Image (cartoon, rainbow, N blue to C red; front, side):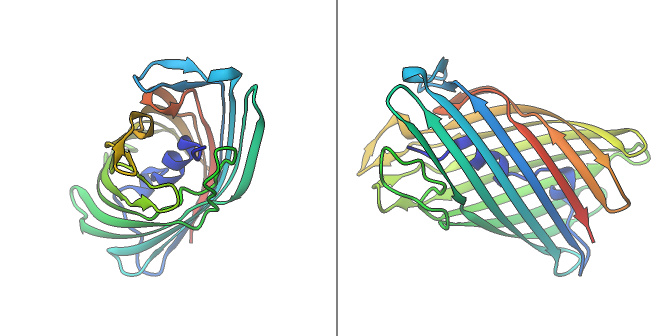
Length: 274
């Protein structure tokens, strides 16, 4: 069985405007801890139809994540992300569950332009650190192969209005899983966000984001069941609880997909700069 796809997308993507476009000043740190939860009985089928899981299937995904960013210079920063997953899938045949550290990601980002438009490029390596077993009855917490991503981020403050807009587009090169013989298709991923501070310390945002995978093969044969895609709209709220710390709550809602879990996701996170 495949790792729950929603966790892959939402833990891997930048979560806030401050993680898109802008880089940290030299010597500054930014940390985030968060929780992701999805409980669903539905999925998007091969042809994009939203249908119940076969055999009364029920999917529960819980993800905990830790992010650390540090400014090496005023333009160059490194990002480290460590997730933990607890996943269960039950149907008429069996009850399956697993948990553990997932695939760790390390990114390098460089700011090309800071005014009037913020433009940043970056590269990400996903290490196959999560436990992976080639067993149809086991839910792995890792994907079992290396990934290499490249992204472009654009952002702009709406000052003197207390708002922002940002966007992000990238391409992920996915390598072959040697244990399964599956060569996952490369993926295009994107997001676009607008946010506004409606009152002091309280900001509202809305984001669209998606992932679109290419053809995937198993031992050289193409299988449509391996190709994945998803599009979400995500309303959210950010509350500043101190001069340096904020709490974010967001609910991504699936609009379409292919070979992907359907339904809303609940994300709660705390981030702080120091």
